[in-house]
Image (cartoon, rainbow, N blue to C red; front, side):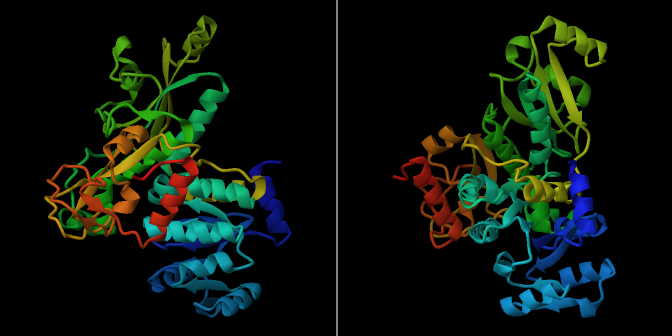
Length: 432
């Protein structure tokens, strides 16, 4: 039965998939509107540190104030949900405890919050859909395996570039093609030293948080997206930070190919991105050596080969997230989840950091982030991006230098740090 048929059946039975949402910013509030118009799904409980945001979002969908219960009390929330009311809370960890919630969507982008919500959800056997890729690339492997043991699904979201890229990867590999490069477009070159201050005017004009925009501009968002693709597929960054050339769609299968064939890659099977005219699209460069398939691909207007471009010219972010929710609840399947640690995103000093200072967090003033092969990052003793926030500088770190275990101490009181230790133990990784 098709996914929509399942949803229509649930709608007719008065048994929609009930979704809890953590983080009612641009992505979260957009997802609320989509689930409102869909059959068989509804966002019924929303957590945000600013309750007015979900309240306003609900009202914009025609929900009356009388039908909204604002509470941090579990019993009150359970009762209100049973009566068909919507829940708004400041306590993100309340949502996994609600019996009538089938799945949680984490949309804050804050690594520690994502770790706490996913952990609590999985322990309560709730499916988890992560719009928080920052948490995924830090401790997603541990969370995925924990979910498998408890019988629920941990997955990244369809609509985010990693999830959309994974559909291209699945399509190509299922048909026996080789994926030479999997990647995305970025609509501007990386400015490693972007800060909330340098982004403020543009952020305000686009109704964005300046810190969030800085995380896009300094490359962090792209790096974590590529790492999520890498850890789910086994494809690797060819060089630290990837090549990131300016390439338009017609030349993707001429550039993202091995150097021996005129491209830029030192090996086959990579993740990368371009600042050419590709965004908001994603792509896969695929190959075959079968002469008949080459002949057929030419007949189907895919070019002369042996390299071909699969392009999806859009990704719809939170608009597509409900597809991952539905697949998790109905089929028990993940859109994208890490299989092993292939890549690591490591923190790099955004300014001269002085011994004794405490750094800020992702998208701030103190560090940006760069993708490395996991083994290379481990050899360099790099600090994983998700552990860098609010840590302490042990030795002066010049601008552009990596934060390492020799010059930097993470905040060991966080759950994400403890979870990373458990992930390392699971993998048999030494932290000495």
